[in-house]
Image (cartoon, rainbow, N blue to C red; front, side, top):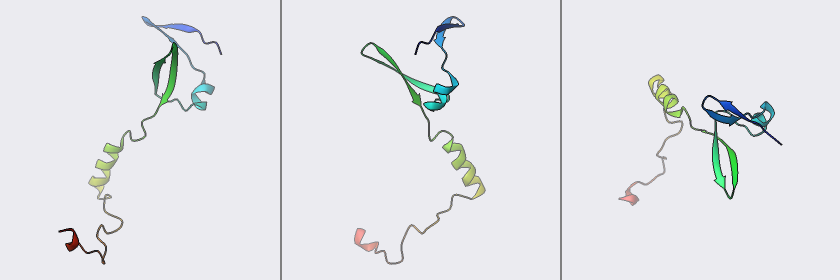
Length: 81
């Protein structure tokens, strides 16, 4: 596949088609890898992006309670002393 290099401000860049973006799940960022004379573009994902804000909101709403007890009824804590 040939892709043209185009001017973007004082730099140059490439455009990726919507099909390629969807097929390789490219959203906001890509990782650029230089390896043995090749340029590799790898989709970059941030799966935990925004979790800190969500956890803070959960805490403010009181939604961060344990769903199960962290100590079981038959657990013997004295053996760890």
